[in-house]
Length: 155
Image (cartoon, rainbow, N blue to C red):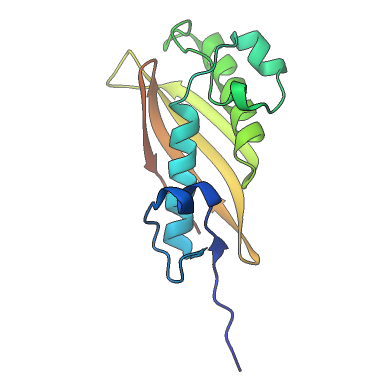
């Protein structure tokens, strides 16, 4: 009896660019490759800036010129009201541009050792093969860059 191999299709853009994502057959990703693909696309999304204001962005629909997120320089990393607005902003970006992630919850909190950035934790579910898995990346966000660290890995 043949066993079911858990895999997911590699995103077309990654295949076109020749990005190595642990592809066994050139098209399907194993669990680690799938996780790396999600992280790569999430990093691309959060490191891209669009020209909309935050209010315009939160009302926007999916459109290629709106890809990314608005400039973050208006946010104060220490203000709780800005944490809430940033959670809404990141949730909206993921909803629009990362359809593999569902049931997304974004939590923003103060970064204890860096007053210029915030800690962002994302809890979500992803479909991998025929299974639904938890995907929970966390990262430090400041106005100029995003460093993505997975915690924990896909389960």
